[in-house]
Image 1 (spheres, rainbow, N blue to C red):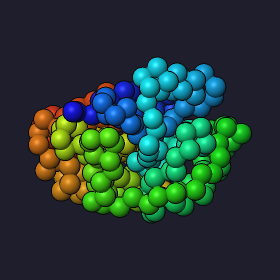
Image 2 (cartoon, one colour):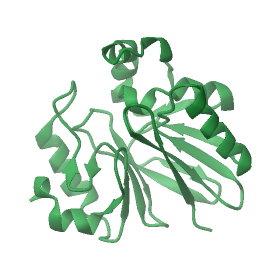
Image 3 (cartoon, rainbow, N blue to C red):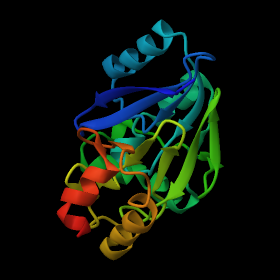
Image 4 (cartoon, rainbow, N blue to C red):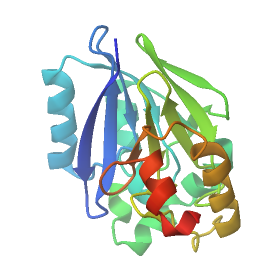
Length: 215
């Protein structure tokens, strides 16, 4: 049975948070929890309850504040450890400084990475799985999650419709990012759907043909 995807757009950052779930076992993963405040937390809580889903994984594609602001809520509410790449651990250690820049320090807490994810790891969600691909350049620990069976990719801030992730933040590297996209993502089937960290979904084939950053 194919995995299903629910998309939420949260907070002042316009972050896409994804719930990926197996409709048979009702197991799920929450990717990049961007909920901030009780209303957004309740939106997630109510969805999970309504769909009778059990949270098995809390995954960050990377640890910039917009993607990690809801980590503590998910981890403590559902008793799951944070899963992310070790190279982004310094970003989590500086998450209060990140939050202070946006005036939201009181809403954010440091959450230790409970499980390090590396390239090639496979994350089981019921009968489905997500494959970890390491694509640094937006941040050094940035990963994307590839659902090979269903032909989709949860891409964080690596690849967008007509654009790529910014590289002017600490740990950013434009050459590294573009090289990683070309060698690791554009080699996937053209009909692979890309669910990005911000904005609307796209496909690998569309970005190959029209993304000016990848020419």
